[in-house]
Length: 464
Ligand code: 6PG
Image 1 (cartoon, rainbow, N blue to C red):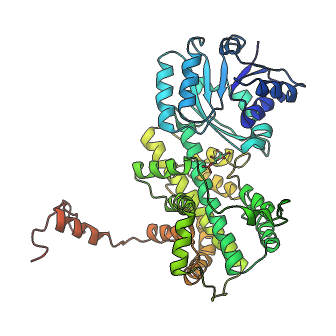
Image 2: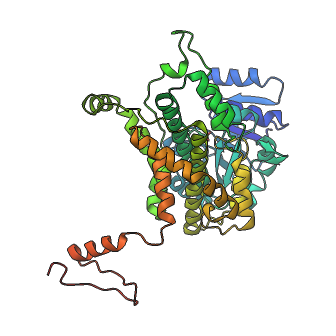
């Protein structure tokens, strides 16, 4: 009998099952492909690992309560696995969805299975294929009592920072998948901001790939130290055997997406949260996909014209620190609103803690964010923390300087500009929205509030 079962033996699934097995748990994998099972058995030959193509055999061979993790593509495949397993599952068994599922789907599946006495845990897993094998960050949500059955396995398999596992019980129902979605929204924003800096370094400051590698190498030794800066540093060293060029120069500039960034923006709109840095990063992936349209527009309007060389890499570093913090501030503020709306009861210090290792957005700054939430879990925005605001005050002028540079030189820097506009807007006690209210009242009798007395008012004579 096996301790843990896993469905979906792609690279992620195979690596995670080997991770579980190498931590002393007996494991069994399910796949329709002989090759995947063979590969699992070969790579897992030193551990207690088995594989099968039969749903019934897979389920019957698991110790009760059964712990079955699905690492299959989000969407229909998850529902179809649930339907396939239902005839064999028994009261108290645990299904874990480790994919990037939409939180609404997780809520629906949780309730559907609860009705059948089956536990459902929605667990975000971050860290790519290497993370899956050697320690991802795991973001589980669902019933707390049920999580106690998984705690030991998840803690053993997750990444560790200073001995602390990068996993914790996050909250009820879909909280785990919601937190993972926000993780991905922040991931999109930071990737976009890094790319904007690459654009400036390459076309503005005319640096070679080797020099850009050195800039990122230096940045990774400072406050920006993070997984995404680290891999960016390394990307500028990779060469393409076929062409003899640097590989980064041979890659088509159209960014793909699977949808988690878009879901973050959609959910922010639904819950009434402003996350323009994340929104703009999703938009930039969309703009990038219209290559021929961009080529046509360039032939009409021209490309960037670099005539202003008045910035240096220290300005860029500071500006990136500023927008990096703004990205986290927006994502975490969205989590706060979602937690209230959906009664997740999230602990933000714990979330920052489990994001410090294993996941794609792991970064040195998470230590600062952890401290901020340790002082006050009710912090409505990271930017209100004293230590964070001193970093912001130290970097915002560089962000303004780099923004002006990009505007003057026609370098697109949508996410940097969005970060700065967000910052300027939330620190403006007076915004021009009194005018919007007047316009709404003028054309649609939508009424307005006054600054001098309570109530709602309509003015019937806006145009005389
Ligand atoms: C992770 C990643 C992972 C996946 C991204 C890619 O945390 O390990 O976020 O989940 O690589 O979702 O997303 P896009 O294809 O949308 O860029």
